[in-house]
Image 1 (spheres, rainbow, N blue to C red):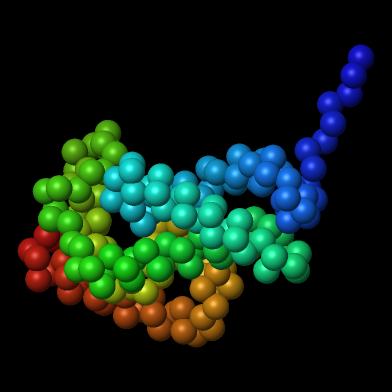
Image 2: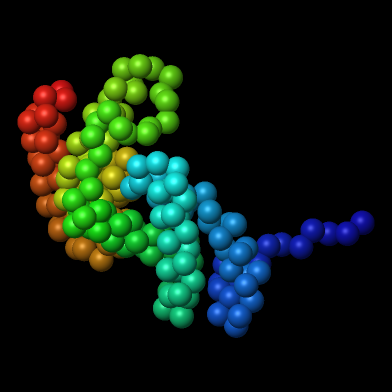
Length: 182
């Protein structure tokens, strides 16, 4: 009877990937794919953009593997890379003036028509926020991360996260009221 080998720790895979082992990085991608795609889905409009954003996150992580020092778990470091990548994507989209009309949103179908309408209204409002506002609302309210986690992921102070969250909620409320979406 052969015993199953335990999976190597993320840190070992990172060390192997740094040494040129592409299979080690592929194992990291496989291990953390669901989390990265989940985060990308919060910031992208459709399946193709989710795929592109997730690929961009893993590419950036690969290029920055040398910056991973193991002070925190790899998963936390990768989450921070992902947040910054998503934030950069939001800022780029804002600079390009990309806004999606409410009727063009591609959202997964909700079992309840009222829930589907609420999702569309929320996505419409979020798409009109500044990148930092959308980021903090998404992390705090949709991903239900703590203020401390958001501070760690973004590099902002906890007080700054609280202030940004308050202002982002006010901005979202204003956008929705002005669009008569409520």
